[in-house]
Image (cartoon, rainbow, N blue to C red; front, side, top):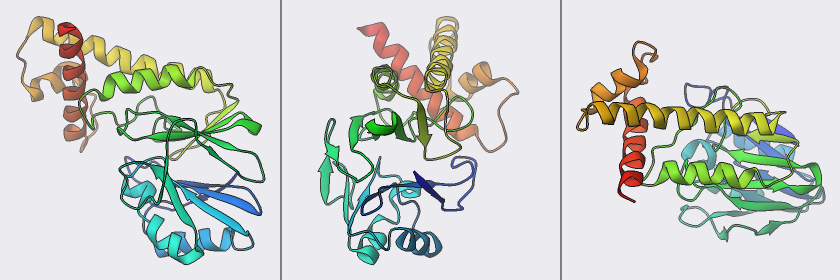
Length: 246
């Protein structure tokens, strides 16, 4: 696929939002990115000659979907994506097919990062456009958005194992050329964190949020990541406590 980077690098976006383009005449733009004029112009130029254009979204976070409405107007394309995302005109659900002249994309429900998150399976290339379900670097992504998100995330990884994959294209970071290893790595990290939270709660059943951060991370937490780490651990606490009651 063609890939254009929005240039919005940061601690959560890594090298920036990578917008992918599949197709020549019948083209889709996957995650058009933040509402930046320069990126919108670059995308409009990249799909200029195409007769049929669609914009598709993995989820509603602004670094993925922020430019969808502006780009939609600029190139005369409908926005397709999951239910509950404001700018979506055509709702996609698990199993829906998007046609391009370089092969079909199949929507795969992958909640966890957000409740509505979709990935897109490019069958012809055995490739997955994974949104924020996986990142191109490291072993973790943001999973703290809603109650039940940790369970959803692990279930989504299990679903992706059922696909025949040769490469995964995350929206942030480089392609993952060994999909099985990547899925194992992200799953193992989450399971290890669950185990750490279980141990903390066994020793201190009503441990405070900041003490839980210290218990799990010690001195290894980068500056500025305290709030994110705490929210992530509270999601894990909810997961552990819910499992304990079931």
